[in-house]
Length: 439
Image (tube, rainbow, N blue to C red; front, top):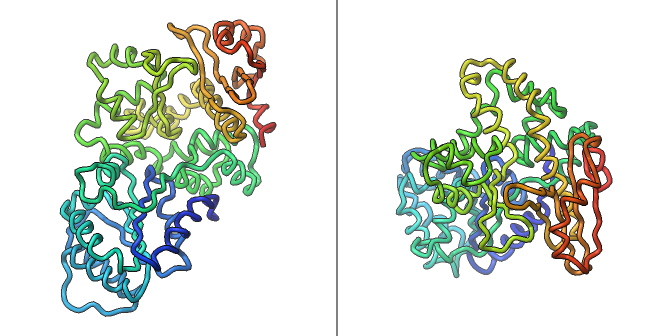
């Protein structure tokens, strides 16, 4: 698959790299696993002298042995004696860079915490001493948000304040998914929605579906629910390490959110325990969920719901983790029956989210969200506000356009529009059919 998008991120990395002629530059790339951090960093540095270190879960001396081979291969310089500490290796690289400028990518940078946490102090000490004379661009990539934030944003950590550039790499936007489907002659509004749901714009998932030529719902379901599918354990692979020994309670919360129990009260009624701290960490430390309030709600309002940010994880908790016993039995036919039975209801909320993403891409609105009143009354799927031109867009979204009803939409919005007396109000009915009018 060809390299898509990321023009802005590549521009940032190339700009950062251009400064290393003056002094050492430190860049962080953070992003969820599979989003394309490695591909981005290698693409941006493909015409530049670059070393690539992957921090695997192994002994520090063995890691240094691998890194030495990379140095000898890429920089074509001999290294004499044994180097079994990263501090020695990093000091040597900084020294080399003073006469031979190069870029160093360290992938899964947070893994040093498990191998030898003192490595960060060593990097800080050597960086501060050498940065003014070194000509090195250090790119630290990491996929565990909580650990990367701790390493670089905690004032008590040695690398706090050392970054020059930061990239928080996001999944591909809808226009890129549209481009990919078109490139493979597989674009349709339905395929766009399915691709959006199953990949969430995550580069690795897109790459796998392209590899298997799975562009429509039937082929995607066959690919996911199959023996040795890489998708079946993906949620565990991505999250168990992040959550640590408390992963059980986090998985239970996410499973309930994926099954439409989206309020704190609903979740606690099932789990029979206070989960305030867990919800806070899921949102602020792990970036896996986000809280949503009605669009006119005050900041301290307790009327809020939670949603899983990542589309694929939402699907995984709803259709794979929930039926783990069937996965263990490899009863894929039963899993497919459940997916076909429940997917239409499940995909309705994702169609709303897709329309919101498309509305955001127009850059017309100053605020976009949803609206409901206490007790989930008078729910409005999408409310978009243009406070500059005093315009208010109220939308209802349905998979089946026959279920759309403008009069009901108008009635449900009566209390909301009291807040926007001087606004021009537009009501819009949205379904799969309307996707094409945005691009």
